[in-house]
Amino acid sequence: MVVAAIETVFMFVSELARSRDFYATVLGKEPEHSRQEMLASFDIGGTHLLLHSDANATWLPADAKKGVGMALHLRVDDVDAEWGRLDALGITLPEKPTTLHTGIRKLAMKDPDGYEIEFIQLPERVQ
Image (tube, rainbow, N blue to C red; front, top):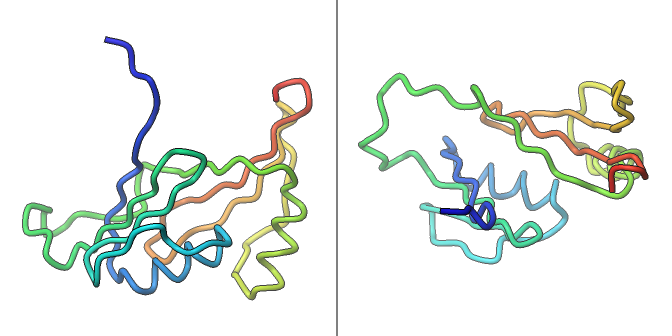
């Protein structure tokens, strides 16, 4: 078997409306699909970011922690422009963009449930 692509990144969220609004602002677009207070789906370059309310997720352990062990990397053309856009929108940004030793520029932040989001800009030679 050969995996062709990642279809969906599925994330449980504590307050769907809050997370849906947060991601709509951060991504600069509305969800392509939304079902009441159950789920919202954003298409990001052919991969779906699916936010699912944990309100009725009885199969989740009661002590399940969000934001642990996962980082969502979103590739952008200009990390500094994204920093300016998000800052102007009033999004809390803990730090300005940085350049890693690999030449990748990144901007890190967290969503309302503590999931790590990193906007990354690849160096010219990697793109």
